[in-house]
Length: 116
Length: 108
Image (cartoon, rainbow over the protein chains, first blue to last red):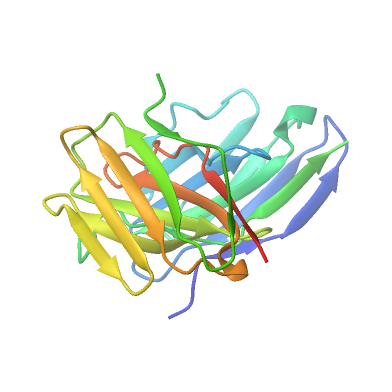
């Protein structure tokens, strides 16, 4: 079974530039999450999708961050314009709605963003 | 306070046992999970426990759950250098609830 795919793995940009990250979840997983992990901290949920609808985006800085999952499969997270404090690893995860262990998350390798 | 709290750092010698502790506030989860994060990688599921169990053993791993005190622990027997990583407890019901994780350092 293929895992969660993310790209790019690494991105370096200057502040005020824009960046986009892509995620393809495990086939059949209805729920998709984007997390921000700042160095030395645990993952913080930015947005949760169920199919192509948003379940929770309460911690997404909507003035600069946006995310979409148009067809209920892959997803894009965009930052525009980027700030220095956006330097972090952006993790995508997916899960089944129900099944053996509901709520179990499957993570991608992450996209590391450095803002200069 | 935070939804999930863990001590930040644990150092053990190779071959010793490691115990990583987690306290939580939300007791509504059916399953409670332990995830492992190696440097430069995403989180991987390590083990889990069903909420109506007190203990689960899985090879070198033992998970203990004290629901009264809302305390979850992970014991790693015969700790190896490959166990060096950050360990997160996770309450399956609320995707928000990752703590800061415990960094386990294993000294040869």
